[in-house]
Structures are given as C-alpha cells and as structure tokens.
Image (tube, rainbow, N blue to C red; front, side, top):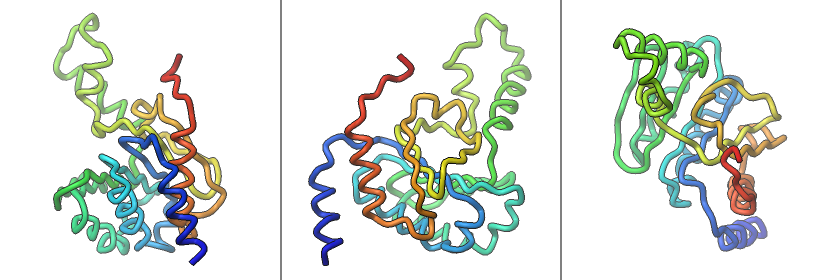
Amino acid sequence: MIRWFYERRLQRSLTVLPREICFMITEEDMIEAPQKIVEVAGWCRDAGLEAATFHISTDDPGRIAPCLPEIRKIAAIGRLNLHIGDRIETTGEGMNVIVAVGKSGREEIAACIKNIAAEETCAEEIDEAVIERHLTFRCAPDLVIKTGGNYLTDFLIWQSVYSEFFFLDVNWTLFRKIDFLRALRDFGARKRRFGA
C-alpha cells in the first residue's frame, strides 16, 4: 500500500518525459525474468512515451529463443519490431517497441558505411542525414536505462550520443515501477546540453 502511494506521488511529480527510452538488458537477466519485458513496455505505454527500445546483450541470440514467446506478447500492447539474427518481425499496433537481440552498434555502423559505398555516394555528399538514413535502428533515445551496474554495450552508439544515462544497481529481475518512475523523474530534473 505504501509503495502504491509512493508510485502515485512520483507519477504526479513528473513534468518532463523522454519521448524515447532504451533499456540495456543482459542475456542472464532476460533468461531469469522474461516476463519483465512486457511489464516494462506497459509502464512505458502508460507513461505516454512515444517509443521504447530493449537491447538484450548476448553473443548467441539462440540462447534467447526460450524468451521469444514472452517478448512477442508485447504485440498485444504495442507495435513490436523484433530484431533477432538476420530476422525482423513486426506485429501489433500502438507505441513503437523495438527489441534488439545481440545487436552491435559497431556492426550497424560498418553495415551503414558499406551500404553508402555500394550506392557510390560521393564523399562530399555524405553527412549526418545520409548516415542516419542507412542505420538499421532509426531511434534516438532521450534516456538510456542500464540495470545491474554501469557496463554498457556499443548498441546505438550513433543514436545515443545525446542521450541521458541512468544507471541502477538493481538487476533487471528486481526492476520495479518505482525504479522506472525515479529514472523518469531524474531525467526531468536534468538540464540537457545535446553536446554543447
């Protein structure tokens, strides 16, 4: 009951929300609590966010296969774009939710450069807009939340250059709505500089 009141108080204190948010999750955390991803996607939708991205860090996307039925449940509450291996599945309607399993930012940038080169684009014509058109993930999270410590992957290395970061000591398995709301409150209190 006390937690419910605290959640309500936190929700009322939110004044500035991120448009897009990204969660960095380890393979171990995903396997231990696969249902958590649907719950957190619901929190994002209920908060009024435009989009949410979940990156699941793994060297072997096949190890996440047992979690796919839970991940696919996101399609019941939003538009799910699931990137796993070379496959992309898109299902559902509503808030845009990307789930990227084992994706690397360096590989994305390398593929982007190869695609630009294949089009024989002149070097003088290459600018930020050209690069962004060739990226796999066309998101730009305002807030990146990393549970379970401060180790980050290189996922969204281009797109998150102006993102705000929020690190939690609590693991994904124990991530609560209160923790989510605290991250949103912290985001609203920050003065964003966008690289300036």
